[in-house]
Amino acid sequence: MTDIDEQGRPEPPLAADETDTLVGYLDYQRATLAWKCAGLDAAGLRATVGVSSMTLGGILKHMAFVENHWFARYLHGREGQPLWATVDWEADRDWEWNSAAQDSPEELHALWEDAVSRSRALVKEALADGGLGQLARRTWPDGRAPSLRWILVHMIEEYARHNGHADLIRESVDGLTGE
Image 1 (cartoon, one colour):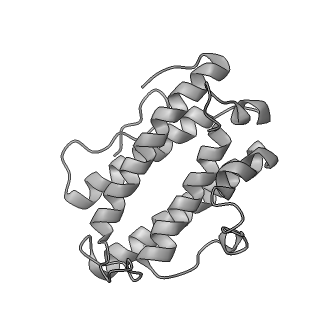
Image 2 (cartoon, one colour):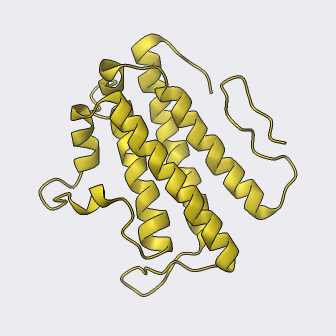
């Protein structure tokens, strides 16, 4: 049984195997982002801090892209969500960040939640197929491929970094603070 904290986040297991620990921490970081973005209207999801153009809506859309990029594209060699194939990345390398301001809160949350759901299924598939040591199907230009273990740790780092940004932005919107 997973313990749930006061913000509704699943606590990572205290004594588990490597897989359950890594997946537990990733789910905790995902839940932290969900908490920081919960209940905000479009203005709240578009708020910025200081000179940064980063928004909570942009973080949600970026993380939906990152989920798809690492779990569908790299790990399994699939395209994943069709949205990302329609983007002209040459015209705007930060499209997911910049376009989020035109999306409704419902669209942003649904896009991110769908990406997380797909990623969970893809991780489960990879674990059944080869475990944490399984190498990604796509490789870097030098031919090396990251393992599922590396991808999970990278995703934990990606969420943790953006959750720090989310803390500051959310506090500027309505004073919500915490972790």
